[in-house]
Length: 289
Image (cartoon, rainbow, N blue to C red; front, top):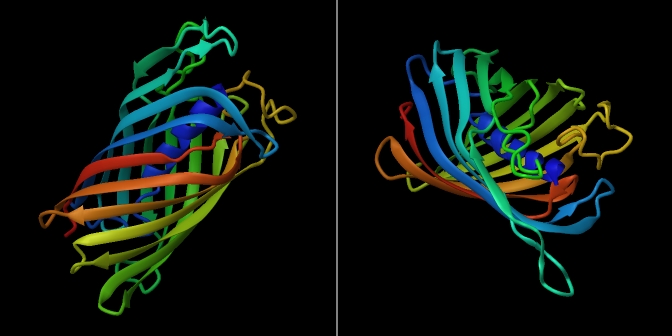
């Protein structure tokens, strides 16, 4: 159960922190987003990729994400889950319906990510390329509840280095873009390192007031952590997790700079990860427009 919960939180944080693709914010401009992300699941992928049932569990994260252009090529990034709630339902006997394990919940902050993006190409390049270093701070709860099985963080300090490349283009009269990324996540506390890759495609409709974005994210574990021979072990939290996830996000500008967003993502295959979709809604302020 510990592995599943942290993996879901991890996916949430990473998907937000990878926003922006290879395009740094212009100097003095910012993008700020307040969002709510959640998932509720009663089954998961095992370490062999099979789907098994589990006690119904839910996770809710309220996060602030922000980018700020220090220069036209340097952008600072922060993702802060300022409120995270993790819960599990009562576990009942299959024959008597008596409660075997009492359900419980915890509330805390989550693991905070801070990052720095640098544009390897100059602003306005035909194919922009950037590199981003993200530091994951272990600020969340690692062992909450009476049984210690509820978490809002993984307790390890990780360093994620990735490179992005993209291309903006016109699709008919609509502004569009495509971007891809790849990177290595170095993890401490005997967690396995990870290779991450993926990309996204976006199209702007209604004179670029309404944006639709499709996303693909892939995580592959190096399986070199302390529990590499036993991926189901909960002695180390959320180790050796792998997945292929797809998602869709919609962003609508209700004014020139203020907008609302909604999205979902789902792992179509995986190892040690919930077999259920996640959802998000948010409001954002975009100074770059």
